[in-house]
Amino acid sequence: MSFETEGILHKKYEIESKSASFQTREFVITTDGTYPQFVKFQLTQDKCGVIDPCNEGEKVKVYFDLRGREWQGKYFTNLNAWKVEKVSGTSAEIQNAATMPNLPPVFEENQDMGSGLPADFDDLPF
Image 1 (cartoon, one colour):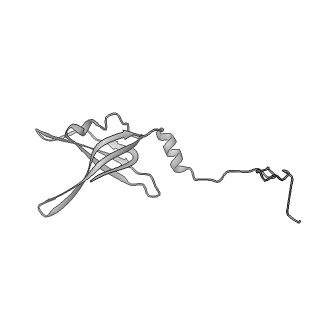
Image 2: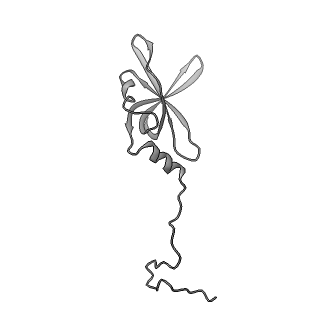
């Protein structure tokens, strides 16, 4: 199963050697939305370096697989990332866009809005 998601790179960890022939690296992104989520991903083996070009605070797109396994009657799930891309835009622009409400455009009173009526036309009877 292959999935993708976008978010702000919150934290990236160092490479960990689990054995002489197996290494992993984890990183966390923060998702956009009303209730932002901190989502941890895992990189393995030769994919541990794909996060290197990205800096914390940058918006990234993560491609990942959902992995699950059973061990001694317990079940574990990993989000196994295999590709990470930077998304255009700076983190300041992204943060401002996330915090700015969508406001309607501001119009000045008596401004001609293309109706063909004079700008000083007032149809109110009082």
